[in-house]
Length: 183
Image 1 (cartoon, rainbow, N blue to C red):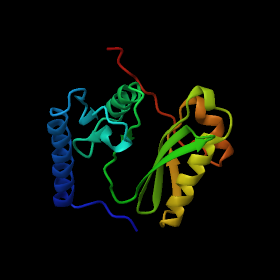
Image 2: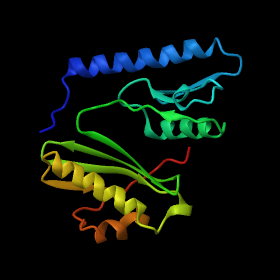
Image 3: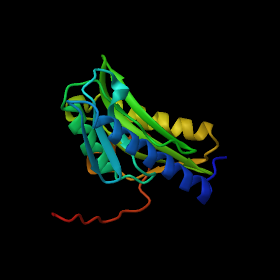
């Protein structure tokens, strides 16, 4: 059974994340073509060196904004350099990256807490949709959660993913409206 980390452990994890992010900022200042951008609780650093773990995105704390992380990762990817995404390791959290033909085709996150697994951020670029990649990552996240002791799984679906999730056996138990600001 997966347990939530204590407040003391969570505070130490945040402190370690912040220290790592500050370290990358410091090191980047010594390299002529390096740059650092901070946004939404994460830092992107490009050293210019063609090694994935020397160009990437690191969280500054456990609850870094996923949208900001994705935006920073896009900026790093646009350099054309090998790069990486460093995620804070928390008990029960699994991150998935699906590849086909040497290309990244889908991603997802599974979070197992006690008797349930939540499935989040199943994302497949348009060019790779309708080939079962998102379904495969979703099924894997559920299977891993069940293997870790979960008894059931849940997710929130976007309209494009709805048919995939119903084919996998998910059922609608609630519908929520979501309003998003324009600015």
